[in-house]
Length: 250
Ligand code: 9D3
Image (cartoon, rainbow, N blue to C red; front, side, top):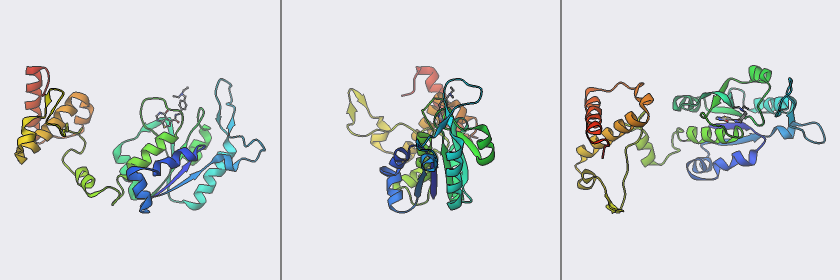
């Protein structure tokens, strides 16, 4: 997988390959990360990368010429990759969009800074505009790093065996069930008994029920996209009944 990132802060974006899953994937050459700094394409002695907005008002925009030249430079090396502009106005990023990018083999991220990018440049050069959620961050770099991390996890061979197996499990599209480790009693709270006793089928059912129930409680929007078979509907119904009786599911 090839990632090209157009950014005024390459040293920040490059940190994404310094640790963990993404770092190991880079070490194994499963991904390549190239940063392109518009500042390198400036022509004035002050290396200006911002410019004033027509119509006035506070805030600056990214200066068009260095950005355009940086985009042209990337395009010479990466001709087929989709160019994604990361901005608060983008469509919300979903796992399925990221999975598609793995199949395409390369992607170009444009990280906005200041108040953003001239609308004509977006129209002419940008294939898609993405946001990572309804909160304000200071620029596109952290959003690009989020996307690179999430896409890398989908590259075949990037996850260890255990994590890959987990990814394929039933829970796709649902929140995860609760997890417990030692000690068996912690600050007066015990691990659910059936996890300790360990009937395999009971544990599987309990985990699936917890995943369904927590999704119902915390993210009902996710359940709307899922068709539950009779077995899963019964597990969820039981969770809901228990919740309504006791006020909380143990
Ligand atoms: C004054 C209006 N603000 C727009 C909501 C200004 C503004 C805020 C933050 C302009 C740019 C930014 C920088 N944010 C990003 O570049 C960004 C972002 C985000 O803020 N939230 C969620 N996803 C993303 S992706 C890029």
